Length: 82
Ligand SMILES: [Zn+2]
Image (tube, rainbow, N blue to C red):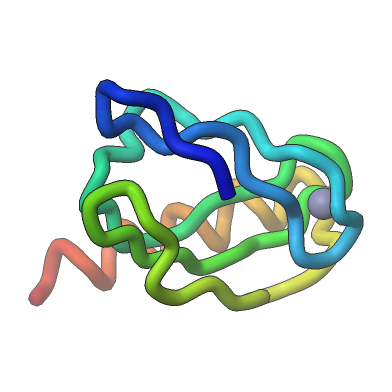
């Protein structure tokens, strides 16, 4: 795991296909939430603390494109209710 000086997380490796996932813009150095692998469409859950990976797990692997959108929507909705 390599981090740059800005504290922005650099590319992460997908736990399913082991390819690099481009970190989306909304991922902050203390991000906690989901991440989707652009390659295999797996849904991953990650927790970052000062750009370091504190937790990283597979939520669902190799989803269809439509299920990814649905899963993300469900997660965002449930997080908004908190
Ligand atoms: Zn992947």
